[in-house]
Image (cartoon, rainbow, N blue to C red; front, top):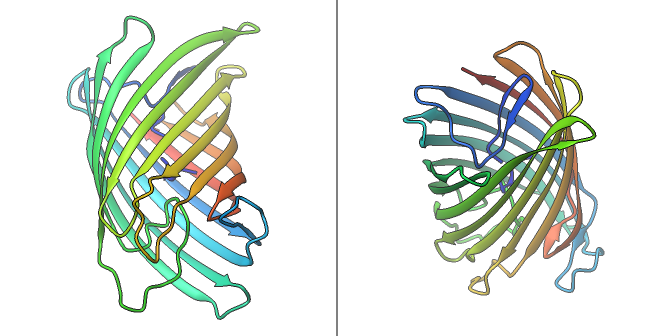
Length: 268
């Protein structure tokens, strides 16, 4: 899941070595990660964070992340996405939402003196629903145009040894400035990965998004928390596959998503 959205996570892997989102690519190197997710929810979290909102929800989401090392310190990023969802509120008629988005920007390595610290800036254009993360709002019969999101993200990554195995940790904090009527957002994403041998890695991730208080109807304040566990397997020196599952154990004014994801990674 790249909730989130995003959130979404920037991850490059060479068999036996892991590099999380804070790392930049080497000059003229590239990577492509194609992600496909299926999610559902049989209830949602209401305005008091209680898991009893009467919602039924099904979503299909896909995203392709492309990165290119302009230099050893600067990596260019582009990420088109497509999603569709069907939601039913309080037993009402199902509503179908279709959304497309395009995000682009760059990540710059600030220092690698104590782990890796980098800064990323992106600009995203999406449809009125932006199904990559956050609550799925009722459709506004008046219609809403495309939304624009400007994001500034600070990333820190480090490698470690655990029981003689290679591992890494990645911490990211982002602020998103979004056009009305959607509220601005603050995101905190956490990732830990541990290698079992030279070709298999287990990853645990936490994706957390909190909206600002500037939402305009029909949007509302929301809080979204998701946990994902996945397995990464290197197939060749250039190709890897990731299988994962995620849940939303807490939230406010969001759906309680449960989903599975499949990602194919290619890099050089």
